[in-house]
Image (cartoon, rainbow, N blue to C red; front, side):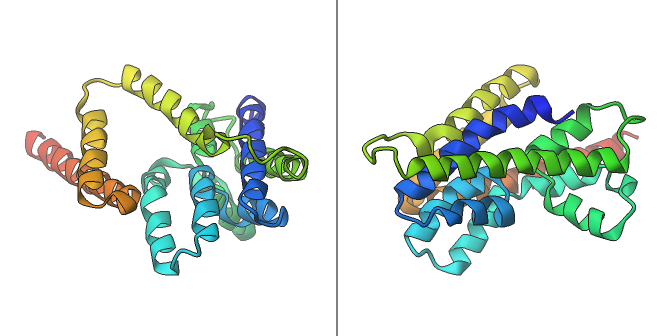
Length: 218
């Protein structure tokens, strides 16, 4: 079940591992990031944050805004099917975009607690394995190769295009672009957390407005 998605995670993990080495960090950091942080987009950001010795408060705020979408994942993720306490804790930790996509598209009857946890384990194994390969190979790859830090950006650009095509209306993507432009105008050096904050605020406000309208119509 996790194999098709896992195969696509390996090259991204390799790119992360190479980036870690190219930024002058010990190759073991690739294992630390993928094992403890385990959030693809945040891990790419974390490399730059660690190298720049970014204050912990800023790191925490960035992590909150980048991964805030997981709050919405939890609303429909079938965690109740995972019975064992340790397995439940791991399943919460390993709730990534890919794991949620599997739970949202799989047959509900076939999606047992065992399947959920093992799928998450396999997904993380693909990610960790790719990063370790990248960090190992990165020690012999010339430093003048650029663009590896753009790998995840390129992936999410493609996914965003597909999401825009699949959904109705342009309100959400236009709001995302507007948030980025406003954040860049306010503080270019802190563009990401400001843009994410604005966009999250919009999503929360939109959710409350939609919920209130449904209750009124009912």
